[in-house]
Image (cartoon, rainbow over all chains, first blue to last red; front, side, top):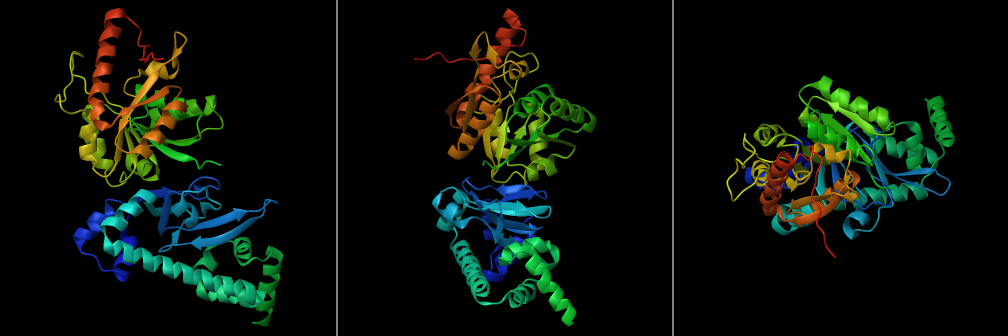
Length: 193
Length: 220
């Protein structure tokens, strides 16, 4: 239920079994079925979700009802609307499950309490958010500076698991391409091989 | 848009469990009805689907699976069964709202089996130390759920618990069920609420209210 969470935690900051039990008391185990929402736009994001199993996405919907995927999350990743989580303002993201999922949720109240009582949790969260920030910078750089083909190659090389598990039209949305453009890019690449 | 919350009702084939489940079918909830006898709980789910075609409802025979998926767990079981249920769901109920509806009545309905300084809800909290136990739905009879407005007055439903956010969430659940929610205080108030229902049961038997009666606080 919390295996991967504590595996990742221990990789970054080793915990004693006592500390692990203390932290576990604040975690919420949650199963989500495919297509079920964890969060909908307009609602306050109450938890950071760590993915033990399955795949989720965060996306926004524009005025023309087009979905724009902000982030995917598979095993070992976290997903949330961090702005809403930290400020209590309504979320701008929707988060739903692309596959049946098992999550470990850290609610805002649990987060605050853990920050106050567990210095190792603070270190873990800092490393987690730093990692996510770097990933976001890279994604931004790739999106604004690389041509479509290189962008796609970069994505499949960085995240081979996601590329295999997620439908192509969602990958297109994530990269800011139309599904048709992505399909042409993939065909061009396949023709060259 | 409000994210749909999942509610697991353990003991959904019983009188109270079925009544609660039916009353919540009109809300923005995904209901997981569970009981040991799957066929009985399936019948309740079918009934809900026919009266509320838009309801999201499912019957399960596993309280652990249902509670793992749930945001809110309703332990719609008698006091004597709370220990067994708690042992099963302990891990998956971590940090979740668990509603205790039980009234720990003795066999002759003239007293409670719990000690004067505790309650069914507080005992459940001891068994589930990391859950947010909330007392609710214990001062209402099963028939009240179909008729929450009695003699022209909407019955009050009292809630007790220690977590402000959880109390707010459960107040919304109680409103959806059709009652007027009143937060009575922290979980230690549960003993009073359980004794209130003992009195109502005794009055019901004495004055033959036909199990359709409730509490209403009159105030300015």
